[in-house]
Figure 1 (cartoon, rainbow, N blue to C red):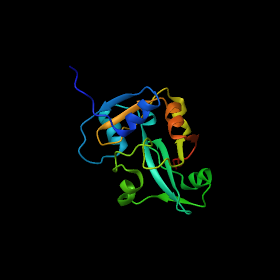
Figure 2: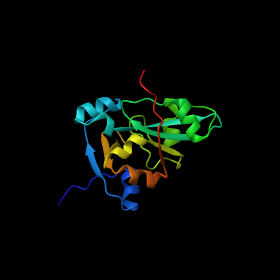
Figure 3: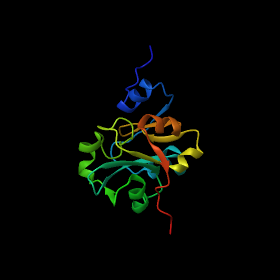
Figure 4: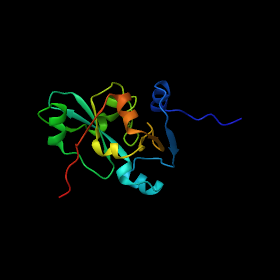
Length: 162
């Protein structure tokens, strides 16, 4: 009998929406950045996406999903979400706001469905890699499927390299 896979909340949400995905498990006991994880797993940075949570001047939360080697352009992000400004939420607030821990944050299954923006480069791939909702778990799925489930839009939110 096959060992039952421990599903994360993110996987259960994808199952509920009948969206196909793959799971990649890897050894990880503490937070490491997405580039280190991509290196460890032999994955391309441009196909590996991190989930960042920001807060706007109004107090609203916004989820930004971008390639692991890129940074947010806060002015672009604020304009896209309709805020005067946005900034990263403090690390100590990640669990309270999202239900996830740092390094295990995924746009799927947060405590609330926050407005979500996926960097437009995700559309270049049939499959992108995101966190599976806990350390050591990744989900590989079609970016359009992800956008559909979290009601996201594709926009350019990354800072241009100087």
